[in-house]
Length: 437
Image (cartoon, rainbow, N blue to C red; front, top):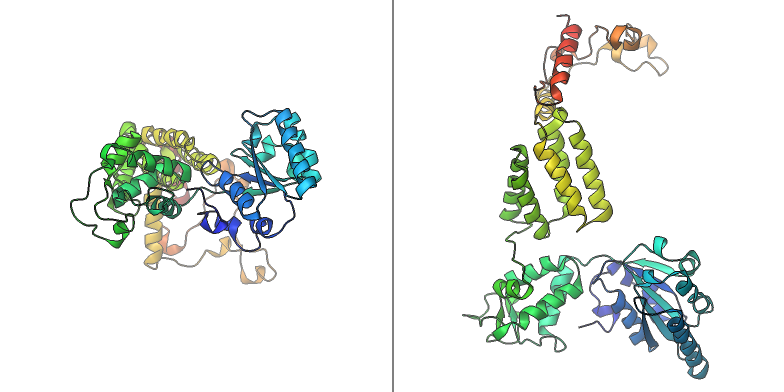
C-alpha cells in the first residue's frame, strides 16, 4: 500500500504543495539533499521511494542500524559509476541516520557536497543533536507531522478497497475503524499492521447479518457478503481492548467530568483511572493538561500554592515531549492535585467580583489612586493624598482602595485548609486594619 506518487501520499500537506522542496525535487533534475524528521509511520521512507519512482532515479537504501563506513562508500562509488556511465542519478536513502557515528556521517559529505547522489536521510530524533553540522548545513530539513485521524481513516479505507490491499475481501465496521484510528496514534504503518492482523483472524471476522446501513460502511467493501471486521475482531487481533470514548460525544464530557470530580474528592486512584481512559482513547493530552491547570486554581488555590506550578510544568512538558512519555508528567500533576488540600476560595472570589461588576457596582476609581504620570494629571487632582505603603510600618497604610460602591464588599474568603490557613489569618488582620476595625 505504499504510495507511488506524491498525490497518493496522505498527510504532510505542508510539504507537498506547489513550490515546496519535495515538489521541486520531483519536478527538476537537479540533485538535492534532504533530512526528513518526524515520528514513526508518518511517511519518511515513503517520500524517499516516491521521489525515486517519479523521477526514475535509482533507489539505494542503507540502514544506519547495520551499515558501516564501507557500505556507505560502496553505495556512493556505485552511484558515481552509474552517473558517469549512464547519466542516471541515484537516490541514496539512509534510514535511522541519527544512528550513524561521526565517521559514518563524514563519509556522506563528499557525495552530498559534489551532488553525486540525491541524499535523503530519515530520523525520528532531533537532527540538530544527532547529525553533524557540515552535513546538516548542506541539506534541507523537512519536519513531518503525525497523521491526523482523518488521514488515518483514509489510509485504512484505501487499504480495504484497493487491489494492492485487501481488495474488498472484508468490510470494516465503523466502530472497528474508529478503534483502529485510536490505536494508530497518527502512525500509518501501525494502522495497516493492525488492520492486516484483524483481517487475517480466523474466518476474517463475522459475516454481516444485513446489508450495510450507510454509504460510509458500504464504501469499505466491494460486496455485501464479505466477512466483517468488528471491534471484537480487532480487540482479539491486537490484544488491546477498545475504549468506548467519543472525543466529541457524551463519553468525552462524562469522563472528563468524572476525572475532575475525582481529583476534587481527593481520590487519586479514581483520577488516574480516568486519566488512563482518556490517554488510551486518544484524547488530546494538551486538553487534559489544560483541565489540570484550571483545577489547580479552581479547586486547590492557596491551600497548596505549589499545585499550580506542578500543573503548569506538566502542561509545558506535554507540549515539549508529547506522548507516551508525557503521560508520566500528567500522572504526576494528577496525583499532586488529588492529594493537595482543597480550597475554592479563589474561584468564589473572582466569581463574586465579576458578579458585582456585571450588576453595575463599578464606581469611580478614587482620585488618589489615579494615574498621575502624564502632563496635566496634577491639575486634575490625580494622585493627591496617595500614601506610599513602603513608607509605613509593615508596608501597610490605611486608605481607601476600592470604589465607594463596593468598599464594604468581601470577595476573598479563605479557608482553613492546608497552606491557606496562615493566609486566612494574615488576610483577616490586613482587612480589619484597612477597614479601620
